[in-house]
Amino acid sequence: MIQSLSAENSLSYLDENYKRVTSEIEEAAIRAGRSPEEIRLMAVTKTVDPLRINRMISLGADLIGENKVQELLSKLEFLDKENAEMHIIGHLQSNKVRKVISTVSMIQSVDSVSLAKEISRQAVMNELTMDCLLEVNIGGEDSKSGISPDDLFELSSEITELPGIRLRGLMCIPPVCDSEGAVRKYFEQTRRLFEDMRSKLYNKEEITVLSMGMSSDFVPAVLEGSTLVRVGSALFGERQY
Ligand SMILES: *Cc1c(COP(=O)(O)O)cnc(C)c1O
Image (tube, rainbow, N blue to C red; front, top):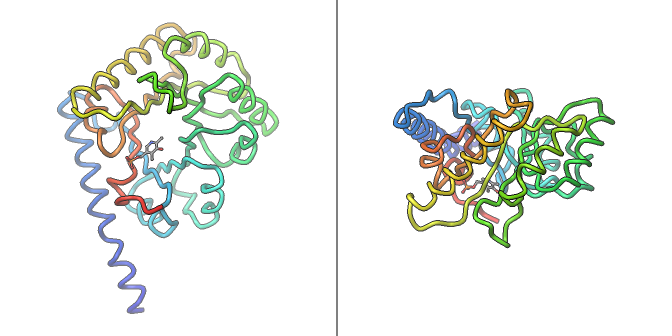
């Protein structure tokens, strides 16, 4: 009993972090003249154990993001899946799609037509529709996956034709910037691409998700129109690999 009480107490920093992050999102939304309900908080759980993840879920975090299929699957049986949705946010190899197709509600990191085709194939086989975001390499960095802004329209048109896939919007990870102004430019560019995509694709009512902003930059991301922020270390503390 004493032990479980102290284990509980040792997780109370998560409560503080959750409160702080949600109120910062709210303040940023209000500053931008937006309704705080327009912005969804994802708790990014790479390297975080199920005990801490479940504590975060109990506080109200109803969306979990994992980068790696293997890591997600190894935690899955311990997670409070009743109360949280899960998304894949990291580079996904086509041969791993079948392992997550019935577990996650969205794949945010679609970066090629061949990956989209495999998602489509597996979704159809499993008689479901998978929500997807296209990952845009907004800074044109060689080190990052994601599609080039120049290819966005062609690829998104092609992907919306596939059965079993519902294209919902864009995700980006901007380059590391040394000022808030610099990172805001990338978020602004991504929002423009998002709006452009909405105006050109026939399924525009479905294009509603703009996933941008992490621990260090979710405030400028919200100011620039993000509808989903992906926050790891500001919620769980520094990652220990
Ligand atoms: C790790 C990760 C995050 C969260 O990063 P923090 O800086 O810890 O908030 C968000 N998005 C993606 C794609 C990630 O890999």
